Length: 241
Image (cartoon, rainbow, N blue to C red; front, side, top):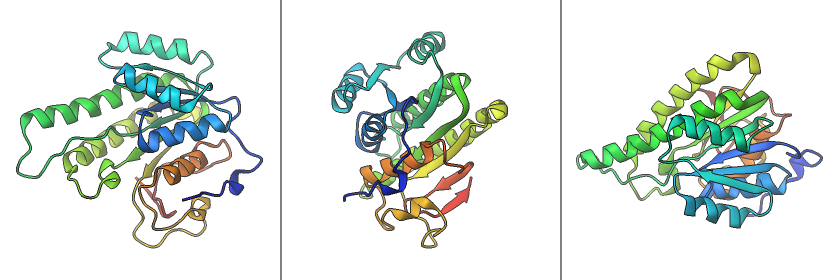
């Protein structure tokens, strides 16, 4: 699918610093590439250094990054400060690939792995929030199940829903900075979309496509975007969360 970029002509992310969590595959990688092409300085994080290296190679010269796990909070906070000396303008958090968790067959090992991944993402956001600049954008995304409808990731989605609420509470601590917090769903809405939403320009019924997700993330990241506190579906439908 080729996505028209005409709706953001004359706008860019030039001079902005964007941190993208799990930017080494799928929608995260597509978003990182687009942000870098639009002028942002992109910092990618992942739990493994080889994933970070792969993402940097794919994105190009505007990208740098670091592995964030396992790492104690003090080390991670110091790494963020070194990589983002002028603060963070955009923080995008993409879910991990997930663990298969068939209802009735969820083992303690799978449960521990899923919750560990969610805890890692939450820790990253919690440490990055103090570095976010006024009028910055925090974009959460998911659920991971939308990327593969033939698999069962119910446990991941439930854990990520919990994480979303925890992060919403954390953002409230920085209300004086006007951080825009939105949740970018990989699914279509239920009512056919909100025609007043500029995101509606991009293909209703195209849920889960990486380039489409990246284009919607681009809109939410633009300083001109005023959406806040919304769950934004792929077809343009919005609801508060």
